[in-house]
Length: 357
Image (cartoon, rainbow, N blue to C red; front, side, top):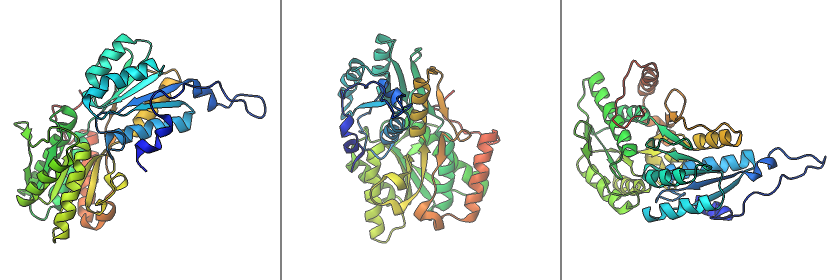
């Protein structure tokens, strides 16, 4: 069952909280005391079952519902034209906090927050809004993507790897920058010449679909990369990446040995098919961050100071290798641990124009 279906009982404009429930001893159930608090979430156009950042963020608010006993409402966007009416519907329904998911909701979130200073907001993947009632949830994703680039370069059998994006925005290019730097670092350390297709970090130019929904275009792009010799592909495009999975499945059925690096969530846990070809994933632990931010707000500790996920605090990470465990040598595993420690200590510098400052 999809995430959207699981949340059907709490759809748009569901009833607000009830009074605290009485326990058998006559007191109030601590969890039930939070039911006068309503946490709300608005997806971007990928929807809550995108096997990516919308889904991870949604799981965070559902975890808060379970752990805190709060009410939850959600609005699922199918297109950018849904952003403003969806956010406004959450405001008028009396939400205490509204979580908006994605850089593309920045303008809508800023407008709603400025017009409704009594409502707290959190926005995932955006740090453009400077208002006292808006908390950014952002990630230095380039750090984990650097590890993925090194992994891809060291695991490739063809000496070519690739990446592409949905839309050329900072929350996409930060992955691609880190990935490119990881490939370059592998080449430097190993005196190798692994080529990266789909992204030129210096020029900030590369391959983009233009949206986060066109899976057919993702499939075609991936087929093109495979035809050019790339055997490991990292799509940074939400559900579009499912087209990459399909292309790899078909190519491997014909004798190929191609692999995918997923992003945002652990693709092995979230993608419905082709998981055996997922080498690893560049994870942003959005669910944990959303649950933490809501918990702070419930406890009266809201602040507009950005939450920044890093390798050091566990906000970003490289996922386990799962079915691809044997494809990754013990030497590579050890080197990845050394790289992680080096990035955390500052010995290895990962640079992206899109990294949080």
